Structure formats: structure tokens, C-alpha cells
Length: 388
Image (tube, rainbow, N blue to C red; front, side):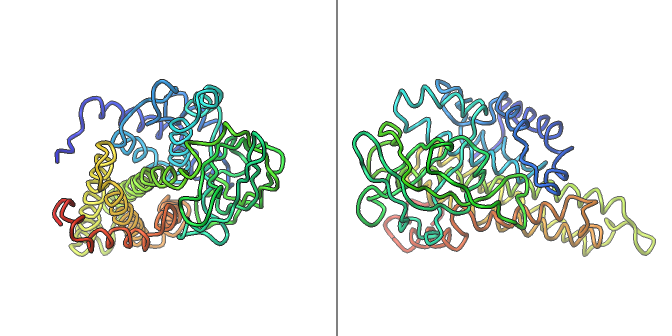
């Protein structure tokens, strides 16, 4: 498969890189140290389409492919992995909301979300429902023309500062078929937010729990049909796994670039670090892993664009490979910088902290291996996987 970028894609890449270098890179360290959520910067990202990269043009989005989106998010993540990751979550939620909402609801919300005037959070995980997402306990009971939501969501990115909540709740029996999806305005009566979690990384976006107590949601805010929520959520997650994978690639590229500059500038024992073969080999391994991860991400993105039946498996592969590799590359970059890499005078420790969570969210990398292994062990299905 040819992954040479077209001229249009290179122009999109330049646009994203220019925005990242101008709007993200100069401020990322301060946002991290002071836990600043850069709402105005996100709005400016929306003004050039980065809040609706793959949302349809009729809803104000750019209408780009998932491959195009991976190019954008990689460039943004090279400047600030935390802020770029929030943008990917917003893009995923905005895509789901614009694709499955009813026409009158889309008319009120779609362009608000794709322009960045309104921001969205994704509410799936619960205190007792993490990897086993289909066991969620939040309920949505029909009451006249409304649904009444009760329950708690955990680890919600942007909670407390976003405007729209994409909520998965149980409208039927046990298991995935009893789950439905809703668009819930964040200021609806009965919603309360927990404290901002004190996290290892991702300091430029808040993470809170959300409690729903007798929250009334109009019936037309149901996304898709009753019982369709889990399928919608998984389609959103396929894309978000590729998005988070590409954020790891972006951070790893920045870490590799910083390491190359440092090895050429720093000398020990009267020689540049770049002249030591052991360090050359380490840099070569980092570069090789990075290229392999990027190619896997772009393959998975292409599978999503084509609607391939094995796209879910490839999204899981990309997420596992790229987020593991991204963290390793950032860790090696810290080591190559020695004591300097451990300080905040260099961005390496921030890249390391911000990429660690990529191996957890969107389905842990252990769950990604479960998805892949099930497909491989299904001999009939695995025959359709490239190279398996």
C-alpha cells in the first residue's frame, strides 16, 4: 500500500505544523505546569477546521479522511500531546453526534461543535465498568417524551469545561444490546462534576467524574435508535484508537528530533554523543520503531476510510503498536538526554508523562491484544487479514 502523501495532504500537514508551532508549542510547558485548559486555542483550532476534521462538510466539518486526520493530529501532538489528544476526543464525539443525531438536534449542535464554539466529552467509562464497557450501569429510563438518566461516569476528559456530553446509558437489558447513546447538554439540571483528577500527565485537560441524578434528556437527543449505542460507541472508539495512536507517533517524532539535536550538540569524553556507536544504534532503533508505528497507524486509518470489515482489528493493532512504541521512544529520549531529560528545561519528561496514558485509554493495550488474538484464532476470519 502506497503511503506517499498527496500534495493536498502535504498542504494539510503544513497547515497543522504551522498551527502547532505558533499556537501550541510556545505554551505547552506552561499549560502543563499550571494545568491550563486552553479554550481559546481550541477555538482557534476550530476556525481552521481542526475541531471537525472528519465530520461531514454539511455540518461544518472539513470532511477529511481518517488518514488525513492522522496527519493533522500527528503534527499537533508533536507540539503538545495532551492538547492534541483532547482535540482527538472532541473530534470523535463531534463525529458521532453529527452522524447519528436527528436533523433538528444536528441543526442546533453540529456547527457549534465543528467550529470549536462548543466542545464535547465522551462518557463511557464508569467506576465499575472499564475494560468491560458493556457492563455499564448508568440507566436511561423512558418517561413520556424524555429519558431520565441516573448513574456515574468516570475519567471523562474535559468534564466540567465542555458543553456537550456524549453519554452511553442502559435503556434495555444486560449486555451491549441494552445500551443507547445520548447527546446531553453539560448544563442540564441534575449533572454534577467531581474534582479534577491529579494525573501523571495530560495536565492541559481536566479529567473528572460526572454524576447524573434524575437528569431529563429530550427524547430527540437519542443518537441513532435504542439499543444501538454500543455499536455507535465502538465505531467511535475504532477511530479514537487510531487518533490516540497517531498522537503517540507525533510525540515520538518530537522526542526523536530532540534526541538527534542533543546528540549532535552535546559532547562527552571530548567527542560528540553522536559519534558513539552505542548511542547511534539506540537512535536507529527509535527511528525504525517510529516509522513502523506510523505506517501501521496509516494502514489502520486507510482501513477505516475504506470501511474494511477488519478495520476494528487493524485499529487495535495500530493502537497497541504505536502507543507502546511511542512511550518507549520517549523513554529512550529521556535516557539519551541524561539528567537534562529528567528536568522541565527539556520537553522529554512531558512527552513521557503524556504518552503513558495512551496505553490505557480507548481500551487498554491488553484489550487490544484480546481483539487481535480472537481474530487470529478464528481461522475463517483471519484468512481475510493481510499477511495472516
